[in-house]
Image (cartoon, rainbow, N blue to C red):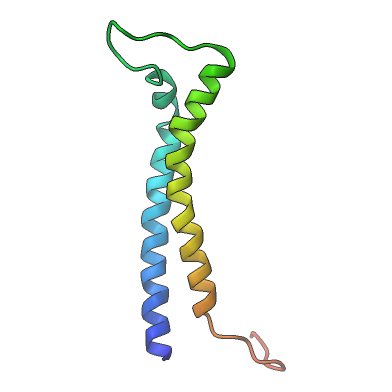
Length: 92
């Protein structure tokens, strides 16, 4: 069983690195999402005020949420696979 737990922890680490890289790139793309929130072309209608903010948050926030939920799942799985510390042992 310890070998399985080690494999799971390594897979979780790889998944966390990939998801964090994707999330950082998505955060960096926020200005681009703001610029193209109304689309490109002659038939675009500009949104302003609260409607523009809401449209941006939906277009940017939903994918960010989709990226972060598996990340939190991997963190939870990794914590479950860690061995429990015995009482009375030193961490030195």
